[in-house]
Amino acid sequence: MDLFDSQPLQLPGAELDYRPHWLDPGTADIWFQQLAAETPWEQPQLQIHGQSIPVPRLLAWYGDPEASYRYSGLVHQPLPWTPLLSEIRRRVEEVAGQLLNGVLLNFYRDGNDSMGWHSDDEAELGTNPLVASLNLGGPRRFDLRRKGRGRIEHSLQLDSGSLLVMAGATQHHWQHQVAKTRKPVAPRINLTFRLIRS
Ligand SMILES: O=C(O)CCC(=O)C(=O)O
Ligand SMILES: [Mn+2]
Image (cartoon, rainbow, N blue to C red; front, side, top):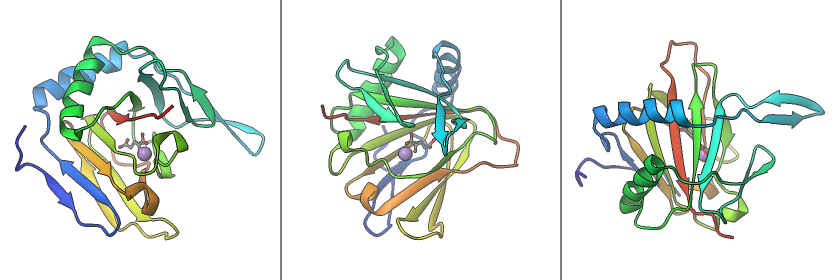
């Protein structure tokens, strides 16, 4: 790992560390292809005002047996670590400097797939959670805004092989999104590693 290839982002009340070239492009491509093919992707339905609406992307949750996780209104039992995901976890834990017992995989098939505004502030993540987010495949824009405000204050283009670590009080004060786009974009897989406290 190149210690100097790290960009701390100066946003008030946030602790963000962006490493654009964390992974070499060849490995990023191999990991993308393998995860796209071997993951049992799901598209859960959200219940909104009595209507059933599919989540606008594909998901999978992996982790240690105790790491069940609630997202999209449902509790998900973790799938067991695959050899590739164990290897990725080991490398991400080195950067994070802490254990991470679960990973949410998001597959954005095209520009119509997205993730709405949210903070990673579920109770089972504890007070100041560290979330380490690895990006593979096509680049997408990642937006940040302060809670209670509408305006996007910072955007990052998350390229393939980049790692974004969010820590400290970031999730208390900030929300993030990956918006839909009309630009043609290649498929993308994002992996967010977390520590679930049971
Ligand atoms: O796809 C991304 O970069 C964001 C993913 C995310 O925010 C999440 O999984 O909580
Ligand atoms: Mn998130």
